[in-house]
Length: 163
Image (cartoon, rainbow, N blue to C red; front, side):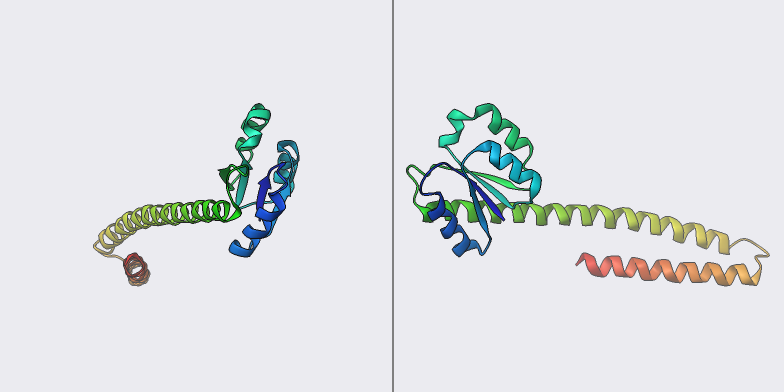
């Protein structure tokens, strides 16, 4: 959902244009206080803020920005911007946040993969050293070989998904 905060009579027109372009329900509220209540009740992908509210609701706006959660703030000026311009700005912001999230996911995935590879290397080394112990019981050796095979399979999967 998209939340549009404006007292402008053009708010409904912009909401319809946003719905048509993004296929995302857009809710219009006239003031920051109402927007804060809506942010507590529902999750939004973007919060579109009309610049006309900046002068009248400075402190409330600061509170609003702290309570956006995962929503991206988009500032527009409905006094001079047509609906198509607002739609372009919102689409660009949504695309930018999706790209940033994808990059963050890749970074976390890479970090986790690196940590797992390091741990697997340790498991393999310790297991191989344990298998080299003289007079190792056959049952223990069999179990250690199973651990090595499992670790090798996990390492192979990590390397395949890295590509």
